[in-house]
Image 1 (tube, rainbow, N blue to C red):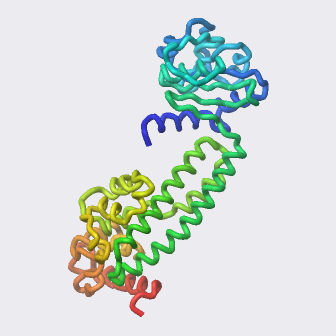
Image 2 (cartoon, one colour):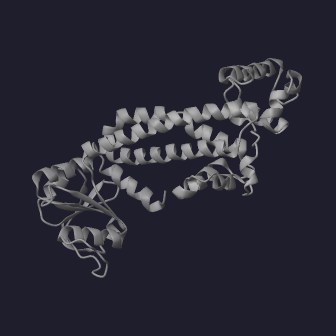
Image 3 (tube, rainbow, N blue to C red):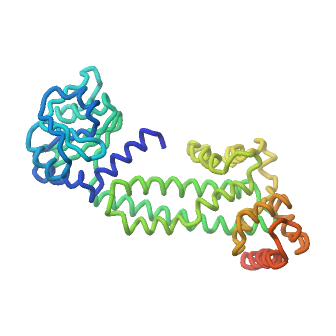
Length: 353
């Protein structure tokens, strides 16, 4: 996410349902008077304010509503603590381009671009449409019912992705235990994880605008995302052959255009493998991070030591209790628990029958 996008999300948080500024905007919409609100510090605002009432008074939604009855702009500080100007006559740089036709929206867009701040135009003529300009960004606030419908649709899609993920994760674990993982097995689950993470990001972006209306659906999202990010990084650690951080690798994969995301070769390349047709038929050994993480009460520090000592899951599977006890932090009880845990996983997944 870019700095500009992150800044815009902070503006959406300020105008989300239940927030004081949104209360003021809703009241202005109901009055059908229209309005123009600029969120800016005083130094920036003075560059475009040519006239108006300088107030420097405490911000409250009620004051904003009353001041909106005057025709011109209201200037509020970005932290929503002070109202600086009311009935402000704004004169932005005329050379700044704008496709807007209405005076209020044209001024809002130019001020936002010139000062790199948020300007909110509330239309009296267009059924109370609220448009946010933030730097070069233009965004029309959505009706809550429309947003809720979009969130519910995205959650249904995410549920489908999660079902697929659970199937792929179980299949991959069985293949790891059997030593039969092929490149497309790894690529398939990583592609699915990217779909999940991208959908989650879209939903969380909608949550910002939903504000207090998101509580129930947020619980469902948290449930659907349990373990996904953690396992994603473990899968990368299991199969990467370069020394890059798993987070950086996943971010590079997420930035791939759609057609390249579907390419097993491209994903293998980001994992550090050399691109070749022969590579696609080669069995990929797993280090065992994700499999070992399924054993109860086995700390990640011990898993790290196991992988460093044996190098691969296949070697760990062949190790005796005595071999395991030679690893730092593994005594007889833990060695026995590791062996029992691996046998249990094999039995659950139907491996070795």
